[in-house]
Length: 290
Image 1 (tube, one colour):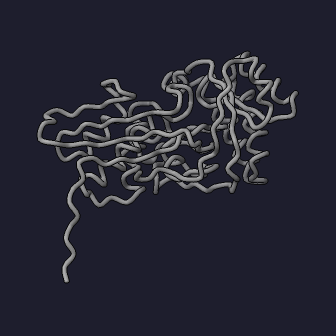
Image 2 (spheres, rainbow, N blue to C red):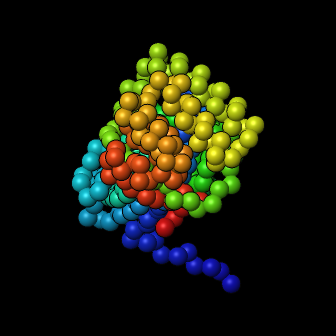
Image 3 (cartoon, rainbow, N blue to C red):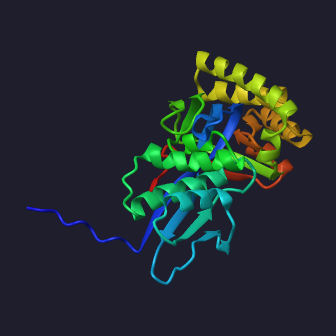
């Protein structure tokens, strides 16, 4: 008995969690797939849903972000690599854009997963995700979000590189609520290209990872992220004040890398003095077809 190939769906959708980094150190190589970062960060249930649609009426590829046609160079790179004809790629981002939540990586990774399924490309999860990682590296928008978003949870990036090349592990954590306040964006591209700034960042990030591996717990991650915030020289006065207010209220907080934003466990009342407080949860699942 032969099995019939299922009919091609009119559209295919994928979901990707957001990702916030507590500390990191950048590693660049000539090959984008061997470039990346070490460090540690959390995947959050704030997600990005990407829908891929192809039809005879679609003559030119179109990228749509939150209902608006966009150049979206990171997602477009993935679409141009994987699409087997013109498509409409629609991504709805639940996370803030440009504030360290891995929005560009989420959009690109969602495109990679959805295109792989839509065109029956036969790529594994890591193989598909590598296209999103390469897109981020080439566009200077990130180094370690995609490999974490491909996995979910509290992800430790042990060796740099794209999914399947870099090495990661996870720290088991429950589905805890996470509070955050966003003041504004920080240009990831500007920071990553500033050699003086990155010298301090990388030194602090290497130390933090070594200390985390001695005691891989959520509490130690938060303490080391907080220390990295100061030692890296990236924290604004606003972020420092917000972190100290949360700590005075008995919570744990740190800056989101790279954004002028703070995340916390506990102490939400103290955060209210620094902007609108939002609450999400840790996401235990990584990218998947929705």
